[in-house]
Length: 291
View 1 (cartoon, one colour):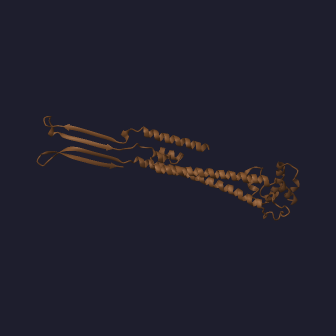
View 2 (cartoon, rainbow, N blue to C red; view 1 turned 90 degrees about the vertical axis):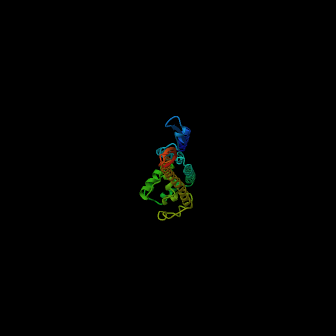
View 3 (spheres, rainbow, N blue to C red; view 1 turned 60 degrees about the vertical axis):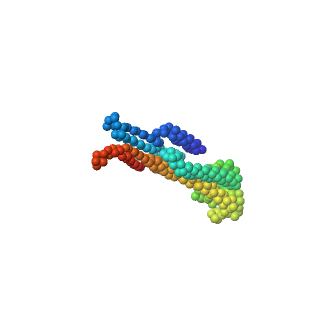
C-alpha cells in the first residue's frame, strides 16, 4: 500500500509539472509572424523608382523536451513519459496495462492470503501431534521410548524430533511456522497425525503409501494457495517489464517529438534588369522544410 501511495504522489506531481510547463509557454513559442517592409529609393522625387521589399517568415516550433525526463517519468509511472511527449494514446495504453497488472496482483495476493488462512485453520483443527507421537511409540521407532504423551505439546514436539532425526528425512517444525504447515501435508510420516488416519491400518512398513482424504485435500488446498502467489509474482514481473518498456518508449517518443517540423517561407520583391537595361520588380519566394 505504501508503494501505491508513493506512485500516486509521483503521478500527481508529473501531471502538475506538465501542466505548468504548458501554461508557461507564450504564443511566440508556437507561431511567429514577421512582416518587414522597406522602401529604398534612388531618389525622393519618384516613388515609382523605389524598390519594395517585403519579407514574410512563419516559423512554428514547439518547446523542446528532455528524453531523460520522459524516461524518468515512465520509469516511475508507465504512461506519464508518453504524456509528457504528448503521445496520448500510448500514454493511455501503458497506464491501463499498469493499472490492470496491479489489480491482478492485488486479487491474487488476496486470494492467496485467504486460501492460506483457510488451510492453516483446517490443519489446526484436524492434525494432532499427540496422535502422531502415539503412532511413533506404537510402532516402536528408534528413540520412541523417550516420548511422554503426558507432556505439553511443545515439549512433546522436541521428543518427537529426536525420533524423527533417527528415522525420517524431516522433523516437525515449530507450530504455526510456514514450514510446519507445509511439511504436515507433504511428507508421508506426518500422515498419521491427521484426524481420519486409521492407526490400525498404517505401520512402519506401509506408511510411505498410506493416504487419507484430509491429507490429500489439504495438500491440494496448500498448492492452490501457492498457485495464487505464483500468479501474483508473475504480475509483479510484468509490472517491472512494463516500467522498463514504457521508460524506453518515452525516451524515444520525446526524441521524435523534438524533431518537429519547421516550415519557413519567404517572399521578396527584388530588382531585375532586362537585356536592354530596363528595371523590373520581380517577386521571389522560397520554401525550406527541415526535420
